[in-house]
Image 1 (cartoon, helix red, strand yellow):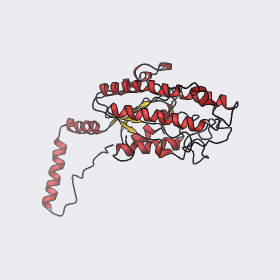
Image 2 (cartoon, rainbow, N blue to C red; image 1 turned 60 degrees about the vertical axis):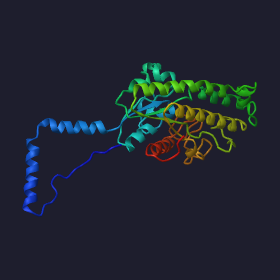
Image 3 (cartoon, one colour; image 1 turned 90 degrees about the horizontal axis):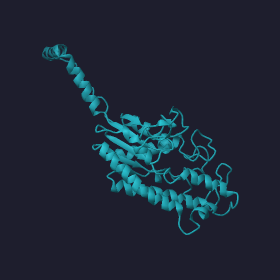
Amino acid sequence: MEGRILRKLLPTSRTGRALTAGAALLSAAALAPAGTAAASTAAESRHRVDYVALGDSYASAPLVPTQVDATCQRSDQNYPSLVARSRSARLTDVSCAGATTADMTAPQADGVPAQLDALNRSTDLVTVTVGGNDIGFSTVLGTCARLTSGNPAGAPCEAHFAGSGADQITDAIAATGPKVAQVLRAVHHRAPYARVVVVGYPDLFPEDGVGCTSSKVPLAAGDFAWLRDKEKELNAMLARQARRGGARYVDTYTPTIGHDLCKPVGERWIETFAPETPAAPVHPNATGESAMATVVEGVLAGHGRRH
């Protein structure tokens, strides 16, 4: 965030007196102990923001070029990397595809360490994108796709998950809330001086609830509005937990409306079930990650949507 400050020690002089003063400065610099320069460098290093990115695949950006961590499917063009470059921050990115709230405090599969292990008392900034895997959203989408052929004009997925009167996804979101709260408490405990930001999920489905007919988006017509509402419920829960947990919430949904998975290539920031631009299915492509980074950076800079 803070660039190196350059100072001109010897401005152009018009008088012999200025030249003498300049020579004195050079002489003093030559006589200064070597430790002085090292101390200056250390001071500059201390002022550079230490940024830790936590989260799941919407933060890690699977398949978005260039992948820099095969295990966690992490891209160097994900929103944390873009924010870090924008702010000249020192980034420790431990976001990982498949991560849940449990993986913040315990090792993930394949030997990936607990993400909160990356935090310490020197951490200045933390972003968190988590919760989608806790409610099993990828599994839900797979179920929706499987049920579509039986009732393509109806809402078979909604009937499956909410037809009995209780909405299983709403219940899962409610159950995830306390887990997110626990993660935020743990973040504050390990990084007590850090600015903590919860980053929500971007707009996946058409905001007007009208779906698209495509082999690349195998969802029943009536399920688009229900899935849209479930994502909004998830984001609303994250916003509440952020407010209660001493964190800032970043709404990436509203700024990405109109760029959902039903839009054509070039307008689409969320890929379809069969991506045409490098990205995981129903995940942000590089443009989507860039859009998320812009919103995060706006909030960090003191403008943009906050909750």
